[in-house]
Every structure is written in structure tokens, then in C-alpha cells.
Amino acid sequence: MAETPTLLRVLTLQRHWQVYETFRLRFEATASSIAETENDPRLRGLSVSKRQFERWYGGAVKTRPYPDQCRVLEAMFGVSVDLLLAPAPPASPPAPAVDPPLVIPPPRPAPVLLATEQAAAPSAGGPFSSETRFDAGPTELERQVTMAARRALRFTAMAEGSSIGPETLSQIHDEVRRLTVAYPRLALPTLLGDLVEVQDLTFRLLEHGRVKPLQARELYLLAGITSGMLAKASHDLGNPSAAMMQARTAFVCADNADHHAMRAWVRSLQSLISYWAGRPAEAADYATLGQSVAGNVRGTTSVWLACLSARAHALLGDGESTRSAIQQVENARAAVELDDLDAFGGIMTFPVPRQLYYVAEATMHLGEDAVLGESQAEAAVTAYRNAAEDEWAFGDEAGAQTDLALARIARNEIEGAIEAIRPVLDLPTEQRNFGITSSTQRVHAALHADARQGGMAAGLREEIEAFTATPTSALIR
Image (cartoon, rainbow, N blue to C red; front, side, top):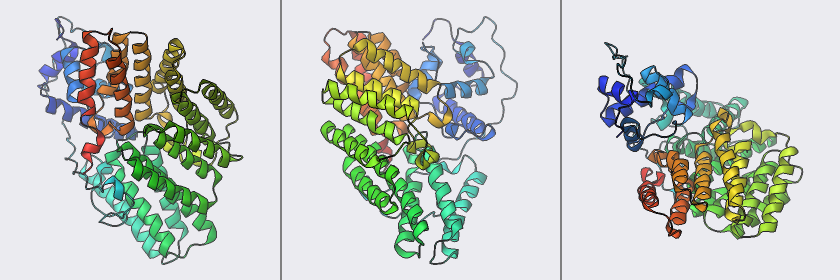
């Protein structure tokens, strides 16, 4: 604990928020309020871990919190974060006589979700059932509005009869776009149930509805995108077998839609799944397959494929192929013309910060230039910290931070590595997906392999072991 208490500690005591659960509820309620007033869905559901609260409260903070955390803290206390984390002045401002009323979001129901192997099966409540979902909102009114909207979509699909009407197709398109935008920003438990329901609805309409050729093409594309997101969800839960099964379904849908960019996107996804499953040769092959089917695709999927190729070949130790692929990344970015997949946004597009992260990781795997690897990882971390809302992704930002930690370990800068990985270790359990926990395990392995490191390294290894003990998959039962 700091010898002189921080202003945050003093104000927390004045407001009687020093118990973690009390502070967490205040933090979540403030985040939800900002999300509503500023129309920023990223903040809905934002929480604070017990470890992070203890670091703030104890004054053991060397770097500023994430920008979103700063926004919430400043709204809670009415003071800038820099002042909150600094030593309290001799006469701290008194607490207001009456705190603003706390609107505590009702407890979210435990997710009743299928095992990842069964992710393609329809949910018990049917498509867009009126059961409460994780992202229904912090108030009873918001939950009712959300449930009513989903019930309306199901009714529209039924009311238009056995043929697929334009309103149904338009509403499904809007729902798929909502999910593609949300996927990189929100924890998986808030989205998985809705993904299963949308996939089930598209499958039912394709199997049993009278669909005109142009409608069928669009519906197959929407089914493919949803199946692709469920493939990513299975991967995030550490189940590559289920992920590949969903990805193959997505590819069949892309074929039926005769959509070249979607075929390439699914091959990219299969390369990603193989890479994290420890099969870099297969990952490289899928990237090559994607590039072969891409044809004249000029959307950002072409950049993703080149990045995946670079990363896979680097893990194989093929320096020449890695450098060639990195050059392809630059060429593809220069030639990008946004397509209809990019128009969906979120998980369907490949922004520049993500490109910087992949290139940094490829350089780190190759191990030829630790200084360059650190510089590239720093650039990726900075890009994510300054990213626009539609380019930010918590998983890829965490990946860039672990790469920066690895680069600093390679240079025996353990304190710098701890600083780099600290925001990752502060992530709540629901965001500790398979890719993030695998990345932190790489840091653990690098620390374990270097006998020169002392007590700080041992402490970091223990923290990583505690972090990886409870991944996201522990929440999905």
C-alpha cells in the first residue's frame, strides 16, 4: 500500500465503497449509465476485477487504466484519473452529503447454453425466444424492449408465411450485423445464445421456406456469417473440433451463396483455428487456400489472409516465407477496396490495428530481431489504445500486449514485461477466451525458460497461473 493514500482511496472511504462488491456495483452501474447516455454499447457490462480494485485502492498503479475504465472512474468520482491515482492532498474534498442514487442492474441469469460440440443445435426456446438474454440491458424496461424486438422478428418470419418476405430478410440482416459488430467488443457469454438462435432461424427458413433465388443467396450469406461467428465462439471456448465443424458449415453456405469473399473469409477463420490449435502447417495451408479462392477479392479479408500466412510461416521458422507474406500484407492493404463483408463491420473486417498485431506476432515468432519485435508490438498496443470504436477488439489488444511482454522478456526487461501484460491479467473471467489464455501461457513459458530472471518473474508466473485457472469456458455450462 502506498505510504500516502491516493485520492481514489480517500474518496472511496468517504463514500463507504471500500468493500469490493460495493465498489464493483457502483462501477458497473456507472458504466451502464454512460453506455446509455453516450450511446456506447462497449461500456455496457464493463466491470472491474477484484485484483484491479485492490491495485487501485492500494495505490499500486504505475500506468493509467484503459480509456474506458478512466471514463467510468472519472464519472464515479467527478475527478480526473490522474488526480485520483495521485497522492491525496492534505485536505481532500469532502464527500457529497448525498451520493447519487445507485441503480444496480438486476443479476444476470446464468447462461443456459449448449456444449460447444452441440452449438449448431436449436435452442430450447426456439429462434428468438423471449427468455432473458445476457445483453438485454441493465433495467427491466430495457429487457422488456429487447425481448419484444426478438419476439417481433420471430412473428414477422411466421406471418410472412412459407415464403421469405423482405421484412424478415431485412430484420435478420440487421440482427447479424449487430452481432458482427458486437463480437470483438463484448464477452462471449453475452452473445452466444443469440448467435445460436439466429443460426437456427436462418437454417429453418432455408430448409422449410419458399425462397426466391436472390433471397436464398442473401440468406445463405447470413447463415454463413452466423456459422462463422459460432466457429469463432467454439474456438474461443477452446474447442477446435467444434470450431472446424461450424467453419465447414460456413463454407458450404458461402458456396451456396456463390460468394468469393465469404469463401476467403472462412478459409481465414480455419487458418486462425489451426494456428491456435498448434497446427501451423495446416494454418499456412488454409491461408494459401483462401488466397487461391479470393480471386479478385479486394476487401480487408485479403489483408487477413496475408497476415495469417506470415504468422503461420513464422511459427514454422520459415523466415523467407514470413518476410514474403509480410510484404504481401503491405501490398494487400494498399490495394484494399472495402466490400460487402467489410460493410458488416466488427468481426467481418480487418482493421489496421489488427494488422499491426499480426505482423508483430510473426516477427516475435521468427525471433530474428527482438528490438524490431518490441517496436512492432508497441505500435500495435498504441494503435489499439487509440483505435476508433469500430476498430477495437479486446482479444486482439490483449494479444498485442502479450507479444510486447514476450519481446521485453527476450531482452530481459522483466519489469517492462509486467507492465505490458498487466492489463491482460486484469481482464474479467468472461473475457479470458482461449486465445488470450494461450497468449499468457506463452509468456509463462518464456519466463520459465530463462533462468536469469529473479523474484519478479516468479511472481508474474504465479499470477499467470491464477489467471489461466479460470477461463471463459468455465462460465459456459
